[in-house]
Image (cartoon, rainbow, N blue to C red; front, side, top):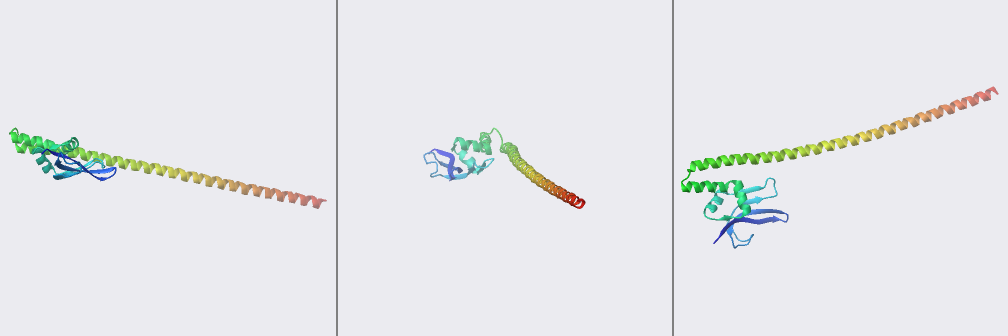
Length: 186
């Protein structure tokens, strides 16, 4: 019986989540499986890969063949490196302590790279949010300035009308006063 480590799809339309399973190669994709090793969620950034490393390594050492996608995920998680080192230990090329040290050193550097990417994404998201906030603040300030300018124009126009009305009222009084002065002279 050929055993494969592959993905089984679940989740809703356009938001798939996959189970990493060990299954007979003849079984359908979402059908019967032997063991569930973990999950894979490609919808997050970076993608979430949760795999039971010990069980995956055990299945690889027993001869299970991963699909291309699962092979990339196992490599990303360091399980294929661990298999390589374990085969070296079994052949007597290196000791278990040296293999463990090499794996831990690789894992530390990989964790640092992953955390650096997460930090970079978080910082980019915060900068984008701050940039959008600054743009919105500038737009609101421009709107307030335009409203204030319209209010000042309306106020100046009202004052000009009031001054014009006072000026015509003063002219009217002066005209009436001169008309009365002419009548008194006559």
